[in-house]
Each structure stands twice: as C-alpha cells, then as structure tokens.
Image (spheres, rainbow, N blue to C red):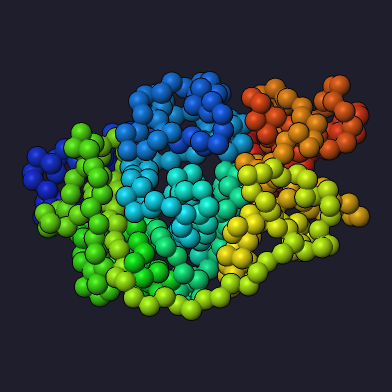
Length: 456
C-alpha cells in the first residue's frame, strides 16, 4: 500500500535507512493473530484451540496465557469467545502486563481510562492482585456498551464499567493508585491492519492527536494518587505523540519515568530520541505484533485528597434467593438498581459505591438478577461471573450447534432437560440461561449481544 511521504519522512528522522525499509516492508505483510486466555477458565488453552480448529504458533513472550495462532479463524462463530474463555488481542499491547508487574505488588485501585473495546481492561482484570478494584472507562456511549459486554463476559466481580470524560473523573473525589491511558492516536502502528488509518493520517492529525493526549493527561492527573503510577501508551511511532508527550508529562508534573524489565531477545526498541528515556517501541519488523509505544511514569509524592467512604450494606429488599447464586471467596453486598439486582464484593463495596455515586456506570457490579413481571430471574452476567455457584441451577451441556443457535437467540429444543430455569454449558463452561418449558426452551441470551450472521 502507498504510505504518505510525510510519514516516511518521520521514519527517516527516527530510524536508520535499513530499519526504515525493514519496517515499511513489514507493514506490507499480513498481521499476526494472537489471543489471550482467561486464566479463570480451566484448561482454557486446549479447549479454545480445539474449538477454534487452530494450532498455537508460539507463546507471546511478554504475556502469560497468550499465544499466536497459525491462522485467523472466524472468531464470531466460536462459542468459547462468547463465554469469555479468551480475548482476541494484538500481541504488542499485551506488554501492558509487564508494566503492571513492575509497579504493582498488592491490591490497588486502578483505572483504565480509554478502555474500549476491552483488550487492556480484560488483561488488567486478570493480572491485578486479588483485592484490587478496576474501573474501566470509555467516553463514547456506543463503544462503552461494547466494553461493558466484553467485561461482563470476562466475569470479574471487581471490575466496573463507566462512561465519563477524563475531566469528570479528574474533578470527582476518586483517587487511583494506577491509571492506564491508552490514548487515542494517529494510528501509525495499525497501518497494516487498518487501511482507513493510512487514509486518515496527516501531519495535522498527528499534532491534533498530540494536543488531545496532553489534554487527557491534564484532565485525569488529579485522580492519580501521589506516588501512584500512570501507564501511557499509543499505537503510533512518531515522537510528537510518544517521546515528546512523555517529556511534557515529566516537565509539567514532575513525573519520573520508570524502567520496565525487558528481555533483550524480545527485540523491543527504546527511545527514538533519547537513549536515557525508558520508553518502549514495538515495531512490526522487530516484534510479532503491531506498532505500540508504552511508558510507565510515577507521580511525585504529595497530599492526598481527603476522601471518606460511606459504609455500604445490602438492601433488605433484595430477594433472598439471589444471595445464594454467588460463591465465596468473596462475601457480597447487594442492591437494587432499576429492574436489576447487583452484587458488590464486600471488601470493595464502599469503594464501588463511591464510583456508582460519582460516575455514570454501565456495570455498577455483578448483575445477578432481573425483574420479569413479579419474578426475579438470573441475569446473563451471572452466568459469566467467575463467582457463579453453577450448581445452584441444573446444568445442561449443549452441542456446538445448539450453542450457536443459543447465541443467535433462536428457540431451543432440549430433549430430557428438566423444566424451569437451566444453565446451559458448552465444553463444561457456562454459556447462559434458558427457561425450559418442555416442548421448547425460551432463550435468555441478551438480544443486543446476539450473533447476527448465519450460524447454520
């Protein structure tokens, strides 16, 4: 594909001629395909690869539970994707895991600020220590709905989804130990995956993105605790959005860049402008993945906001049976919002309640039940939750064809299944709920999530 001459000029100023040519050649090749398994799913790698009909083409070296695939399958028609057993994620961006491990050693309050569609949020939810709270935010309502779907499928009780501007969060009383800012950018690192990114690229757009990134940092910086960490990343190569913005954060806020441990065999590039600056560039001619830039920064010590959390206790109006559908290790507090019952892990209930009071939440907790007429029925998010007590319901294993029909929101016919609410499983993993009437089973899968292509 033809690349803009101004883009090539940027590479000329940052790379040697041989490196530049190797990168341009790599941008003409097909992208790698990589997935990351949900560590809460037993034997996920074997089951997922069998379900996809793929073979592993090697592990992603900087991420646990992640592999490259030998080809790109039709992910939409794999039930295990919809069960949250894995996430299709570009491999370079999984390096976020190394940044987290460098700065986090115990439970934290973390914010993924620009989180949709959910790749980095699902990764954070899996690698943050037990007892951590993760708030996943997306400013655009439509993209926030996609984020909420992906996070519900990932099944973590201590992950919330919000839809707010960085300024709204920065002006709230919320404080975070860790903030990940995967900033909207000019997308040079995605050129071989997205021809639209090539068509939209211009020097003017680069400068506009760089200014927007600085505004995002300025808006959210007050929500980062003194001594806390910010992970700043983009999927672009140029210094305006990368090194120059890191220098701006350092100069304006006194932030300290933190070195991340990197295996030399990973072939990750350092700074393109300053050998002493600990930043990390992934480029397609060097690493198996797309273009990615990341830097870990620490905020100076200072004065914390004075925030007092309100105690939170279960709403007595919550039906008793709903409290029997989740398992330890967490105790849960419950509340009713609209026509849904939600559960909050008891140790985090006060913190999560604060988020619910101050921000607009799409996932305020684990949705446990929904009101249907005079009855409460289990919500689909309950089926996806790691904390589901699956044996509170009759489990019915379905075939791949039945699983796809269910995900297509078709009526099911389940021979010999008991009447009433049942939990469908595929490969022994929860798929969702149905209400078996005998001659047919009413499908309880969310209509807005249904597979829209033919499954026959």
